[in-house]
Amino acid sequence: MDYLEIEGGHPLSGEVTISGAKNAALPIIAAALLSDKEVKLKNLPNVVDIRTLLKLLSMLGAKVDHNDTEATIDCSTITSTKAVYEIVAQMRASILVLGPLLSRFKHCSVSLPGGCAIGQRPIDLHIKAVETLEAEVTLNEGYVVAEAKNGLQANKIIFDKITVGGTENAVMAAAMANGVTEIVNAAKEPEVVQLCQMLDMGGAKIEGIGTSSLKIHGTNGVPLHYKEAIEVIPDRIEAGTYLCVGAITNSEITLLNVNTEHIQTSIEKLESMGCTFDYTDTTITIHPTKELKGVTIVTTEYPGFPTDMQAQFMAVATLAQEESLVEERLFENRFMHVSELNRLGADIWLKGNIAAIRPVKELHAAEVMATDLRASSALVIASLAATGTTKIRRIYHLDRGYDRLEEKLSKLGAKISRKND
Ligand code: EPZ
Image 1 (spheres, rainbow, N blue to C red):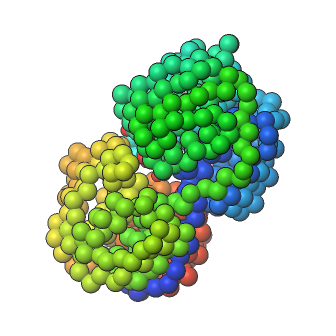
Image 2: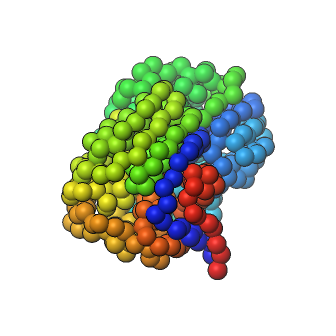
Protein backbone atom coordinates (compact mmCIF):
# COMPACT_ATOMS: atom_id res chain seq x y z
CA MET A 1 0.00 0.00 0.00
CA ASP A 2 1.17 3.55 -0.77
CA TYR A 3 2.56 5.69 2.03
CA LEU A 4 4.22 9.09 2.23
CA GLU A 5 7.69 9.64 3.59
CA ILE A 6 8.38 13.19 4.75
CA GLU A 7 11.72 14.40 6.04
CA GLY A 8 10.80 17.40 8.15
CA GLY A 9 12.61 20.52 9.22
CA HIS A 10 13.40 22.00 5.80
CA PRO A 11 12.43 25.60 5.07
CA LEU A 12 10.20 25.94 2.02
CA SER A 13 9.81 28.73 -0.49
CA GLY A 14 8.24 29.50 -3.83
CA GLU A 15 4.89 29.49 -5.55
CA VAL A 16 2.06 26.99 -5.58
CA THR A 17 -0.92 27.07 -7.91
CA ILE A 18 -4.20 26.24 -6.20
CA SER A 19 -6.45 23.77 -8.04
CA GLY A 20 -10.19 23.91 -8.61
CA ALA A 21 -12.33 23.18 -5.57
CA LYS A 22 -13.33 19.54 -5.16
CA ASN A 23 -16.42 20.51 -3.18
CA ALA A 24 -17.52 22.96 -5.87
CA ALA A 25 -16.79 20.55 -8.73
CA LEU A 26 -18.85 17.69 -7.24
CA PRO A 27 -22.26 19.47 -7.27
CA ILE A 28 -21.37 21.02 -10.65
CA ILE A 29 -20.85 17.52 -12.10
CA ALA A 30 -24.15 16.37 -10.52
CA ALA A 31 -25.90 19.40 -12.05
CA ALA A 32 -24.85 18.21 -15.52
CA LEU A 33 -27.67 15.64 -15.05
CA LEU A 34 -30.18 18.49 -15.36
CA SER A 35 -29.20 19.09 -18.97
CA ASP A 36 -29.69 17.13 -22.18
CA LYS A 37 -26.90 19.06 -23.88
CA GLU A 38 -23.12 18.86 -23.53
CA VAL A 39 -21.73 20.56 -20.43
CA LYS A 40 -18.12 21.73 -20.45
CA LEU A 41 -16.16 21.95 -17.21
CA LYS A 42 -12.77 23.59 -16.64
CA ASN A 43 -10.33 23.84 -13.72
CA LEU A 44 -11.34 20.49 -12.24
CA PRO A 45 -8.97 19.19 -9.57
CA ASN A 46 -7.25 15.97 -10.54
CA VAL A 47 -8.43 13.96 -7.51
CA VAL A 48 -10.08 10.59 -6.92
CA ASP A 49 -13.47 11.97 -5.76
CA ILE A 50 -13.98 13.75 -9.09
CA ARG A 51 -13.19 10.56 -11.01
CA THR A 52 -15.59 8.62 -8.76
CA LEU A 53 -18.54 10.93 -9.51
CA LEU A 54 -17.73 11.01 -13.23
CA LYS A 55 -17.69 7.19 -13.13
CA LEU A 56 -21.13 7.22 -11.51
CA LEU A 57 -22.48 9.46 -14.28
CA SER A 58 -20.98 7.12 -16.89
CA MET A 59 -22.68 4.19 -15.17
CA LEU A 60 -25.99 6.07 -15.47
CA GLY A 61 -25.39 6.30 -19.23
CA ALA A 62 -23.79 9.74 -19.58
CA LYS A 63 -21.01 10.26 -22.12
CA VAL A 64 -18.02 11.57 -20.21
CA ASP A 65 -14.82 12.84 -21.76
CA HIS A 66 -12.35 13.69 -19.01
CA ASN A 67 -8.70 14.63 -18.99
CA ASP A 68 -6.84 16.10 -16.02
CA THR A 69 -8.57 19.47 -15.46
CA GLU A 70 -11.33 19.45 -18.08
CA ALA A 71 -14.40 17.37 -18.79
CA THR A 72 -17.27 17.30 -21.23
CA ILE A 73 -20.40 15.58 -19.96
CA ASP A 74 -23.35 14.66 -22.13
CA CYS A 75 -26.38 13.53 -20.13
CA SER A 76 -28.72 13.21 -23.13
CA THR A 77 -27.99 9.47 -23.10
CA ILE A 78 -28.92 8.61 -19.49
CA THR A 79 -30.36 5.08 -19.31
CA SER A 80 -30.47 4.45 -15.55
CA THR A 81 -31.40 6.51 -12.48
CA LYS A 82 -29.90 4.13 -9.93
CA ALA A 83 -26.81 5.24 -7.99
CA VAL A 84 -25.38 1.93 -6.83
CA TYR A 85 -23.90 1.13 -3.42
CA GLU A 86 -20.52 0.26 -4.95
CA ILE A 87 -19.98 3.97 -5.82
CA VAL A 88 -21.93 5.72 -3.06
CA ALA A 89 -20.06 3.73 -0.40
CA GLN A 90 -16.79 5.09 -1.82
CA MET A 91 -17.95 8.69 -1.68
CA ARG A 92 -20.86 10.16 0.29
CA ALA A 93 -21.13 13.15 -2.05
CA SER A 94 -22.72 10.74 -4.57
CA ILE A 95 -25.96 11.60 -2.76
CA LEU A 96 -25.83 14.83 -4.81
CA VAL A 97 -27.35 12.99 -7.78
CA LEU A 98 -30.64 12.59 -5.85
CA GLY A 99 -32.00 16.10 -6.55
CA PRO A 100 -31.08 16.37 -10.25
CA LEU A 101 -32.10 12.79 -11.17
CA LEU A 102 -35.47 13.21 -9.49
CA SER A 103 -36.04 16.65 -10.99
CA ARG A 104 -35.27 15.59 -14.56
CA PHE A 105 -36.41 11.93 -14.66
CA LYS A 106 -39.12 11.98 -11.93
CA HIS A 107 -37.68 8.94 -10.20
CA CYS A 108 -34.38 7.61 -8.90
CA SER A 109 -32.84 5.33 -6.35
CA VAL A 110 -29.68 6.22 -4.52
CA SER A 111 -27.88 3.94 -2.11
CA LEU A 112 -27.70 5.11 1.49
CA PRO A 113 -24.10 6.19 2.09
CA GLY A 114 -23.45 4.28 5.34
CA GLY A 115 -20.85 5.15 7.99
CA CYS A 116 -18.25 7.88 7.94
CA ALA A 117 -15.05 8.56 9.88
CA ILE A 118 -15.93 12.13 10.92
CA GLY A 119 -19.46 11.60 12.22
CA GLN A 120 -22.85 10.06 11.51
CA ARG A 121 -23.60 12.39 8.60
CA PRO A 122 -27.28 11.56 8.12
CA ILE A 123 -29.12 12.54 4.91
CA ASP A 124 -32.52 13.20 6.50
CA LEU A 125 -32.50 16.87 5.44
CA HIS A 126 -31.88 15.94 1.78
CA ILE A 127 -34.84 13.57 1.92
CA LYS A 128 -37.08 16.06 3.70
CA ALA A 129 -36.28 18.69 1.06
CA VAL A 130 -37.39 16.53 -1.87
CA GLU A 131 -40.44 15.33 0.08
CA THR A 132 -41.40 18.98 0.52
CA LEU A 133 -41.36 19.20 -3.29
CA GLU A 134 -43.90 16.36 -3.27
CA ALA A 135 -41.61 13.42 -3.99
CA GLU A 136 -42.62 10.10 -2.44
CA VAL A 137 -39.60 8.63 -0.71
CA THR A 138 -39.23 5.09 0.61
CA LEU A 139 -36.25 3.17 1.90
CA ASN A 140 -35.81 -0.17 0.23
CA GLU A 141 -32.94 -2.62 0.77
CA GLY A 142 -30.48 0.15 1.62
CA TYR A 143 -31.63 2.47 -1.15
CA VAL A 144 -33.49 5.78 -1.02
CA VAL A 145 -36.18 5.31 -3.66
CA ALA A 146 -37.79 8.58 -4.72
CA GLU A 147 -40.61 9.23 -7.16
CA ALA A 148 -42.50 12.33 -8.31
CA LYS A 149 -44.98 11.02 -10.91
CA ASN A 150 -46.13 14.49 -12.02
CA GLY A 151 -42.73 16.11 -11.60
CA LEU A 152 -41.53 17.95 -8.51
CA GLN A 153 -43.83 20.74 -7.30
CA ALA A 154 -42.41 24.01 -5.95
CA ASN A 155 -42.83 24.69 -2.25
CA LYS A 156 -41.11 26.35 0.71
CA ILE A 157 -38.19 24.29 2.06
CA ILE A 158 -37.16 25.27 5.56
CA PHE A 159 -33.87 23.78 6.75
CA ASP A 160 -33.79 23.57 10.54
CA LYS A 161 -30.01 23.08 10.29
CA ILE A 162 -27.67 24.57 7.71
CA THR A 163 -26.48 21.88 5.32
CA VAL A 164 -24.21 22.36 2.32
CA GLY A 165 -25.12 19.16 0.49
CA GLY A 166 -28.78 19.42 1.52
CA THR A 167 -28.99 22.93 0.06
CA GLU A 168 -27.25 21.78 -3.13
CA ASN A 169 -29.65 18.88 -3.57
CA ALA A 170 -32.63 21.15 -2.86
CA VAL A 171 -31.65 23.79 -5.45
CA MET A 172 -30.98 21.11 -8.07
CA ALA A 173 -34.33 19.45 -7.30
CA ALA A 174 -36.11 22.81 -7.54
CA ALA A 175 -34.37 23.72 -10.82
CA MET A 176 -36.72 21.69 -13.05
CA ALA A 177 -39.72 21.70 -10.68
CA ASN A 178 -43.07 23.32 -11.46
CA GLY A 179 -43.13 26.81 -9.93
CA VAL A 180 -40.99 28.90 -7.62
CA THR A 181 -39.34 27.15 -4.67
CA GLU A 182 -38.18 29.10 -1.65
CA ILE A 183 -35.35 27.81 0.51
CA VAL A 184 -35.06 29.20 4.03
CA ASN A 185 -31.81 28.85 6.02
CA ALA A 186 -29.81 27.84 2.95
CA ALA A 187 -26.04 27.29 3.15
CA LYS A 188 -23.99 30.23 1.81
CA GLU A 189 -20.69 28.47 1.10
CA PRO A 190 -18.89 29.66 -2.09
CA GLU A 191 -19.45 26.17 -3.53
CA VAL A 192 -23.24 26.60 -3.12
CA VAL A 193 -22.99 30.03 -4.71
CA GLN A 194 -21.20 28.66 -7.77
CA LEU A 195 -23.78 25.90 -8.18
CA CYS A 196 -26.61 28.47 -8.02
CA GLN A 197 -24.85 30.66 -10.60
CA MET A 198 -24.52 27.64 -12.89
CA LEU A 199 -28.22 26.71 -12.59
CA ASP A 200 -29.19 30.35 -13.12
CA MET A 201 -27.07 30.48 -16.30
CA GLY A 202 -28.70 27.20 -17.37
CA GLY A 203 -32.21 28.67 -17.23
CA ALA A 204 -33.45 28.11 -13.66
CA LYS A 205 -33.45 31.70 -12.46
CA ILE A 206 -32.34 32.02 -8.83
CA GLU A 207 -32.87 35.02 -6.57
CA GLY A 208 -30.87 35.60 -3.38
CA ILE A 209 -27.68 33.81 -4.48
CA GLY A 210 -25.12 33.98 -1.65
CA THR A 211 -27.79 34.61 1.00
CA SER A 212 -29.59 32.19 3.29
CA SER A 213 -32.87 32.78 1.47
CA LEU A 214 -33.08 31.45 -2.09
CA LYS A 215 -35.90 31.57 -4.65
CA ILE A 216 -35.55 29.11 -7.52
CA HIS A 217 -37.74 29.57 -10.58
CA GLY A 218 -38.19 25.99 -11.80
CA THR A 219 -38.30 25.32 -15.54
CA ASN A 220 -41.46 23.14 -15.38
CA GLY A 221 -39.65 20.07 -16.66
CA VAL A 222 -37.53 21.75 -19.34
CA PRO A 223 -33.91 20.52 -19.16
CA LEU A 224 -31.33 23.22 -18.45
CA HIS A 225 -28.93 24.46 -21.09
CA TYR A 226 -25.55 25.60 -19.81
CA LYS A 227 -24.44 27.79 -22.67
CA GLU A 228 -21.00 28.58 -21.32
CA ALA A 229 -18.21 26.38 -19.97
CA ILE A 230 -18.11 26.30 -16.18
CA GLU A 231 -14.77 27.14 -14.59
CA VAL A 232 -14.58 25.66 -11.10
CA ILE A 233 -13.66 28.18 -8.37
CA PRO A 234 -10.29 27.82 -6.60
CA ASP A 235 -10.20 25.40 -3.68
CA ARG A 236 -10.35 27.49 -0.49
CA ILE A 237 -9.44 24.50 1.68
CA GLU A 238 -6.40 23.57 -0.40
CA ALA A 239 -5.36 27.25 -0.24
CA GLY A 240 -5.80 27.35 3.55
CA THR A 241 -3.81 24.13 3.84
CA TYR A 242 -0.80 25.64 2.01
CA LEU A 243 -1.01 28.74 4.22
CA CYS A 244 -0.77 26.40 7.22
CA VAL A 245 2.26 24.74 5.58
CA GLY A 246 3.88 28.19 5.33
CA ALA A 247 3.00 29.07 8.91
CA ILE A 248 4.39 25.93 10.53
CA THR A 249 7.59 25.78 8.46
CA ASN A 250 8.40 29.46 8.89
CA SER A 251 8.48 29.91 5.11
CA GLU A 252 7.61 32.41 2.45
CA ILE A 253 5.07 30.82 0.09
CA THR A 254 2.97 32.47 -2.60
CA LEU A 255 -0.37 30.97 -3.61
CA LEU A 256 -1.59 31.60 -7.15
CA ASN A 257 -5.15 31.14 -8.47
CA VAL A 258 -6.82 31.69 -5.12
CA ASN A 259 -9.92 33.66 -4.16
CA THR A 260 -8.70 35.54 -1.09
CA GLU A 261 -12.23 36.58 -0.14
CA HIS A 262 -13.10 32.89 0.35
CA ILE A 263 -10.22 32.34 2.79
CA GLN A 264 -10.67 35.43 4.96
CA THR A 265 -11.28 33.51 8.19
CA SER A 266 -8.13 31.41 7.71
CA ILE A 267 -6.13 34.57 6.97
CA GLU A 268 -7.53 36.32 10.06
CA LYS A 269 -6.81 33.34 12.32
CA LEU A 270 -3.24 33.08 11.04
CA GLU A 271 -2.83 36.86 11.51
CA SER A 272 -3.97 36.47 15.11
CA MET A 273 -1.21 33.84 15.46
CA GLY A 274 1.34 36.39 14.26
CA CYS A 275 1.58 35.57 10.54
CA THR A 276 1.79 38.35 7.98
CA PHE A 277 0.60 38.41 4.40
CA ASP A 278 0.57 40.36 1.16
CA TYR A 279 -2.41 39.65 -0.99
CA THR A 280 -4.45 40.64 -4.00
CA ASP A 281 -7.85 39.23 -5.01
CA THR A 282 -6.22 36.16 -6.59
CA THR A 283 -2.78 35.72 -4.98
CA ILE A 284 -1.46 35.64 -1.45
CA THR A 285 2.02 35.46 0.06
CA ILE A 286 2.58 34.30 3.60
CA HIS A 287 5.81 35.60 5.15
CA PRO A 288 8.05 33.66 7.55
CA THR A 289 6.83 33.79 11.15
CA LYS A 290 9.36 32.93 13.85
CA GLU A 291 7.01 32.75 16.83
CA LEU A 292 3.41 31.62 16.61
CA LYS A 293 0.85 32.75 19.17
CA GLY A 294 -1.99 30.58 20.44
CA VAL A 295 -5.36 30.61 18.71
CA THR A 296 -9.01 29.96 19.55
CA ILE A 297 -11.09 28.31 16.86
CA VAL A 298 -14.79 27.47 16.73
CA THR A 299 -15.90 25.78 13.52
CA THR A 300 -19.11 26.96 11.96
CA GLU A 301 -20.83 27.54 8.63
CA TYR A 302 -19.48 29.97 6.02
CA PRO A 303 -18.46 32.75 6.39
CA GLY A 304 -17.34 31.39 9.79
CA PHE A 305 -14.29 29.22 10.36
CA PRO A 306 -14.55 26.05 8.20
CA THR A 307 -14.57 22.61 9.79
CA ASP A 308 -12.48 21.52 6.78
CA MET A 309 -9.58 23.67 8.11
CA GLN A 310 -9.81 22.58 11.74
CA ALA A 311 -7.29 19.72 11.60
CA GLN A 312 -4.69 21.76 9.69
CA PHE A 313 -4.87 24.65 12.19
CA MET A 314 -4.55 22.19 15.03
CA ALA A 315 -1.31 20.94 13.48
CA VAL A 316 0.04 24.49 13.28
CA ALA A 317 -1.09 25.25 16.85
CA THR A 318 1.00 22.37 18.23
CA LEU A 319 4.11 24.53 17.79
CA ALA A 320 2.63 27.84 19.03
CA GLN A 321 4.12 29.50 22.11
CA GLU A 322 0.80 29.48 23.97
CA GLU A 323 -2.10 27.10 24.49
CA SER A 324 -4.77 26.99 21.77
CA LEU A 325 -8.39 25.88 21.90
CA VAL A 326 -10.42 24.26 19.14
CA GLU A 327 -14.14 23.61 19.33
CA GLU A 328 -15.66 21.46 16.55
CA ARG A 329 -19.34 22.25 16.15
CA LEU A 330 -20.27 20.61 12.85
CA PHE A 331 -19.16 17.00 13.09
CA GLU A 332 -19.20 14.96 16.28
CA ASN A 333 -16.16 12.81 15.55
CA ARG A 334 -13.78 15.05 13.66
CA PHE A 335 -10.81 14.65 16.00
CA MET A 336 -9.26 11.43 14.73
CA HIS A 337 -6.06 13.36 13.95
CA VAL A 338 -5.51 14.20 17.64
CA SER A 339 -3.97 10.89 18.66
CA GLU A 340 -1.85 10.81 15.50
CA LEU A 341 -0.57 14.36 16.12
CA ASN A 342 0.25 13.29 19.67
CA ARG A 343 2.29 10.44 18.21
CA LEU A 344 4.35 13.14 16.50
CA GLY A 345 5.03 14.74 19.89
CA ALA A 346 2.09 17.14 20.16
CA ASP A 347 0.38 17.65 23.51
CA ILE A 348 -3.33 17.76 22.74
CA TRP A 349 -6.00 17.08 25.33
CA LEU A 350 -9.48 16.23 24.17
CA LYS A 351 -12.83 16.43 25.91
CA GLY A 352 -16.01 16.00 23.89
CA ASN A 353 -15.89 18.41 20.98
CA ILE A 354 -13.18 20.64 22.48
CA ALA A 355 -9.44 20.20 22.12
CA ALA A 356 -6.78 22.05 24.10
CA ILE A 357 -3.44 22.19 22.32
CA ARG A 358 -0.59 22.79 24.72
CA PRO A 359 2.66 24.12 23.31
CA VAL A 360 5.57 21.75 22.73
CA LYS A 361 9.11 22.76 21.75
CA GLU A 362 9.30 20.41 18.78
CA LEU A 363 7.55 17.66 16.90
CA HIS A 364 9.42 14.51 16.06
CA ALA A 365 8.95 11.92 13.34
CA ALA A 366 6.84 8.81 13.85
CA GLU A 367 4.77 6.36 11.86
CA VAL A 368 1.22 7.70 11.64
CA MET A 369 -2.04 6.84 9.96
CA ALA A 370 -4.32 9.10 7.94
CA THR A 371 -7.97 8.77 8.99
CA ASP A 372 -9.85 11.19 6.74
CA LEU A 373 -9.01 13.76 4.10
CA ARG A 374 -8.32 16.83 6.25
CA ALA A 375 -6.84 14.79 9.10
CA SER A 376 -4.34 13.49 6.55
CA SER A 377 -3.30 16.97 5.50
CA ALA A 378 -2.82 17.91 9.17
CA LEU A 379 -0.35 15.04 9.47
CA VAL A 380 1.51 16.25 6.36
CA ILE A 381 1.70 19.77 7.84
CA ALA A 382 3.01 18.50 11.17
CA SER A 383 5.53 16.15 9.48
CA LEU A 384 6.99 19.02 7.46
CA ALA A 385 7.97 20.68 10.77
CA ALA A 386 8.94 17.53 12.67
CA THR A 387 12.55 16.42 13.13
CA GLY A 388 13.30 13.15 11.34
CA THR A 389 11.41 11.19 8.72
CA THR A 390 7.70 10.54 9.19
CA LYS A 391 5.78 7.79 7.44
CA ILE A 392 2.10 8.54 6.78
CA ARG A 393 0.00 5.51 5.93
CA ARG A 394 -3.48 5.21 4.38
CA ILE A 395 -2.86 8.16 2.11
CA TYR A 396 -5.71 7.18 -0.18
CA HIS A 397 -7.64 9.70 1.92
CA LEU A 398 -5.33 12.46 0.66
CA ASP A 399 -5.69 11.33 -2.93
CA ARG A 400 -9.45 11.89 -2.70
CA GLY A 401 -9.10 15.63 -2.31
CA TYR A 402 -5.57 17.06 -2.72
CA ASP A 403 -4.44 17.52 -6.29
CA ARG A 404 -0.79 16.48 -6.84
CA LEU A 405 0.16 17.15 -3.22
CA GLU A 406 3.68 15.67 -3.35
CA GLU A 407 4.45 17.44 -6.62
CA LYS A 408 3.32 20.81 -5.26
CA LEU A 409 5.16 20.39 -1.95
CA SER A 410 8.33 19.10 -3.66
CA LYS A 411 8.33 22.20 -5.86
CA LEU A 412 8.35 24.27 -2.67
CA GLY A 413 11.43 22.36 -1.49
CA ALA A 414 9.81 19.75 0.77
CA LYS A 415 11.48 16.35 1.07
CA ILE A 416 8.43 14.23 0.39
CA SER A 417 8.05 11.02 -1.54
CA ARG A 418 5.42 8.36 -2.15
CA LYS A 419 6.54 4.82 -1.44
CA ASN A 420 4.93 1.43 -1.52
CA ASP A 421 5.30 -1.69 0.61
C1 EPZ B 1 -19.89 19.35 2.93
O1 EPZ B 1 -20.37 18.12 3.44
C2 EPZ B 1 -18.47 19.11 2.47
N1 EPZ B 1 -18.47 18.08 1.44
C3 EPZ B 1 -17.62 18.70 3.66
O2 EPZ B 1 -16.28 18.60 3.22
C4 EPZ B 1 -17.68 19.79 4.72
O3 EPZ B 1 -16.98 19.37 5.86
C5 EPZ B 1 -19.15 20.07 5.09
O4 EPZ B 1 -19.92 20.39 3.91
C6 EPZ B 1 -19.32 21.23 6.06
O5 EPZ B 1 -18.77 22.40 5.52
C7 EPZ B 1 -18.76 18.40 0.19
O6 EPZ B 1 -19.06 19.55 -0.14
C8 EPZ B 1 -18.73 17.31 -0.80
P1 EPZ B 1 -23.37 19.36 5.70
P2 EPZ B 1 -21.92 17.92 3.72
O7 EPZ B 1 -24.58 18.72 5.14
O8 EPZ B 1 -22.70 18.64 2.70
C9 EPZ B 1 -25.66 17.58 9.45
C10 EPZ B 1 -14.15 17.57 2.99
O9 EPZ B 1 -13.24 17.30 3.83
N2 EPZ B 1 -26.66 17.02 8.52
O10 EPZ B 1 -23.24 20.84 5.56
O11 EPZ B 1 -22.15 16.47 3.90
C11 EPZ B 1 -24.29 16.90 9.33
O12 EPZ B 1 -24.24 15.69 10.01
C12 EPZ B 1 -15.60 17.31 3.32
O13 EPZ B 1 -13.92 18.03 1.87
C13 EPZ B 1 -27.79 16.43 9.03
O14 EPZ B 1 -27.99 16.35 10.24
O15 EPZ B 1 -22.06 18.65 5.12
C14 EPZ B 1 -23.39 17.97 9.90
O16 EPZ B 1 -23.40 17.89 11.29
C15 EPZ B 1 -15.82 16.50 4.54
N3 EPZ B 1 -28.70 15.91 8.14
C16 EPZ B 1 -24.05 19.28 9.45
O17 EPZ B 1 -25.40 18.93 9.14
C17 EPZ B 1 -28.52 16.00 6.79
O18 EPZ B 1 -29.38 15.53 6.04
C18 EPZ B 1 -23.42 19.94 8.25
O19 EPZ B 1 -23.26 18.98 7.23
C19 EPZ B 1 -27.37 16.62 6.29
C20 EPZ B 1 -26.43 17.14 7.18
